[in-house]
Image 1 (tube, rainbow, N blue to C red):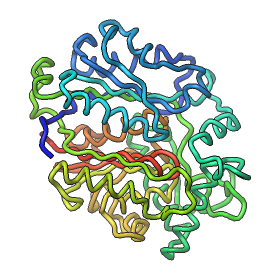
Image 2 (image 1 turned 60 degrees about the vertical axis):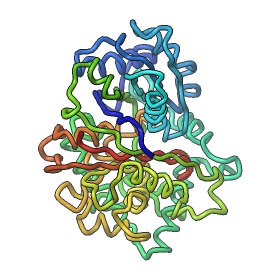
Image 3 (image 1 turned 120 degrees about the vertical axis):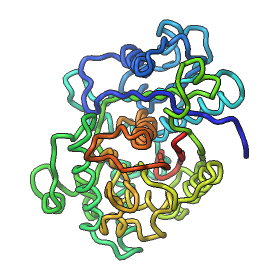
Length: 402
């Protein structure tokens, strides 16, 4: 399939963690104005936009986020919309903007994602957050589960370990590597936390088994996070309007999107068909293969997804994802720098912003703008894999240096 190229003209994000006493209207404004400010552009230059969030109704009592975006001076009356695709909402926002640009609706668009999961004092209501996240599962999968997604992914973790002869320690190594990366990422939620393998494996302090009888522990889990992120996408004509040379940009060269059945039972959860299909489609559109990928960001909502994620992007064979990490192949200087940002486990997981932040970080890597300790030398191609639900909604992208 051929189409006019789409480029990433700007990326902006908040620090992930706690936003404090900042309301949703202000969050939306900061995201848009921040992304425009990165390239000294007025928001009025934007032709269209999409904003993503997942828990905004339950946690923030706010809908119609596109209307809040329209309150940013210069955006009123333009084609703006809100999207929700669970934890893949941010990735979906990017694809929606790209599709509109290809349809000729405009030449410059913005994709915004946010989530505010903590109160103004930075505290979280664990019961309410668990309830909100549980809505993104099938009713039959919720039965008897106090914390739905930790329980579901604890089951995935156990199945992965049993099927592929993988240990808890093998998967804990993924979290340890990501915490180490996050210490060098100034925007990461856990940037001041260092976790050793011994700590990740010892049941003491905050580290505990989440579900009785299943292997998932605290350090295997992603964070409850506030944060926002925004990308400005543009065609070549749009770059001209922005005064940006395409050689200073990253091309959104390929993408894919697919959705597997929401019910976890009755399908191969360790080899999600939609995820592999979406990734294959992104590679085909970009005209590259997995072998060409230098850096990647995969959706490690739990450590087992760090293993499955490198299998989906094609860097490891089926069942060999945990070993890919164990052998150091996911390190910055390894075969492919995977989750050099710290991943969802240590960078943070503000759900609606996550997919946007994955692509944004990957673009920084390709532009040589990652922190020195995390920068992959001479990176040319990046891949991202963003999921929603129990490995249900999949959004994938492939980026190239322009």
